[in-house]
Image 1 (cartoon, rainbow, N blue to C red):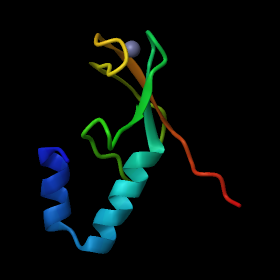
Image 2 (cartoon, protein in one colour):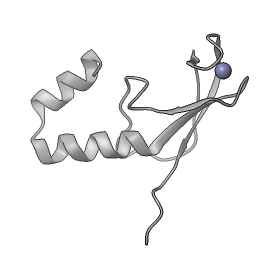
Image 3 (cartoon, rainbow, N blue to C red):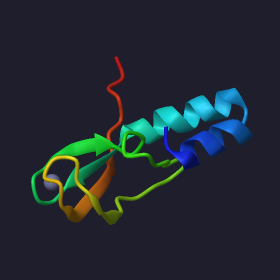
Image 4 (tube, helix red, strand yellow):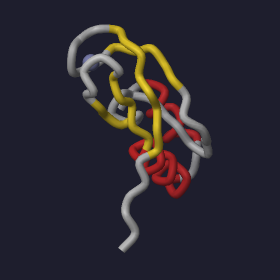
Length: 79
Ligand SMILES: [Zn+2]
């Protein structure tokens, strides 16, 4: 866990911390260069109660470059 993730999980109740983690895992960062994707949570970030499809520049775990990443919510399929 990153510093910010530990901090948030320390100050909010467990139920909320679990909700933040699962929601952050649903948001995927996708590299515009190599299409590698990982969740916001895996990238050490938090995304909660958020909407839209923002774009950010961050280090890609796939190609190792700082590239444009699209952030999109990948909802789990309801069965
Ligand atoms: Zn990449």
